Length: 166
Image 1: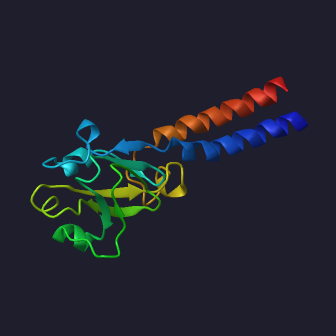
Image 2: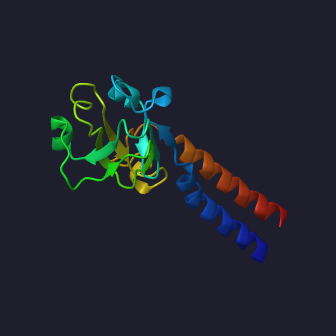
Image 3: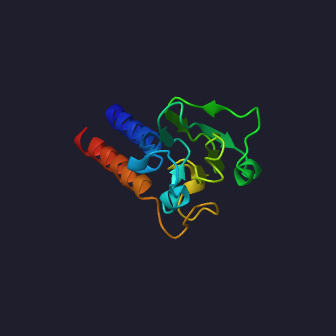
């Protein structure tokens, strides 16, 4: 009986822990990277960004940079002096909170004239109550989260196997 309880506990832990391991790493602009004259809004369209996901900005160091800005700064293509400027050429930004996020290149003329800006919406972490099917803040209340359902079934199967064979 103790073994059955252990398997049940493992299944419950897997059910809640595995979705946090499902973070996706998005290379901004794919093969094109973070560069001039690319439509980053089209690139982002149709993608779902979740808390825990990572944005990777690839570019030649010294030529561009990445600055997280406010919505107003994004519209004006202007960053304030207190914004963090990333300039390694391989900048990785972990999306740590849900909501709107705005990124620009702070090199003069690159944002406004050459379209180096990205605006995304970050959803709650996969498997969190806010993304559960039917919740009011769910991106699609009619469509269940496939990863969450898949790992939920794995947890159920592990529990069942533990109960039957132990």
